Picture 1: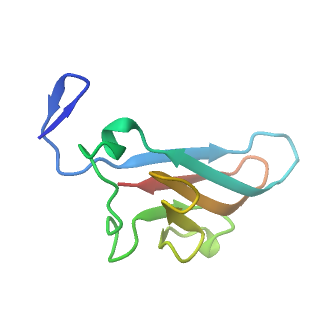
Picture 2: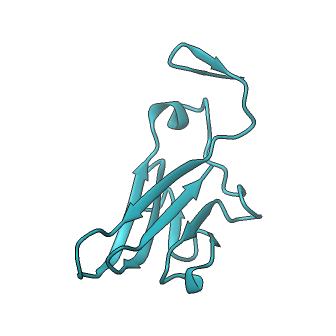
Length: 109
């Protein structure tokens, strides 16, 4: 059970999904960095980032054309993803590149 803004939710896990898209004509976007500072409900201890969401030590999942051949990849704090490194209660994924019309997703729970 989670109490969030006065509402009660019965959940086992919340998964955040961030979608990034490049709609900029013919230009390629390189060195994209996605950063999400988790809100007070998470940092306050009501919810918590799970560093093992997808596999042991792999709490961030990215699907991007230039990472892992475009196949979904579970990230650890030792590669393109990190938690609490760039800032307190912050998830960061770096190194994404998108050609025009491409998109990527970053997920964490």
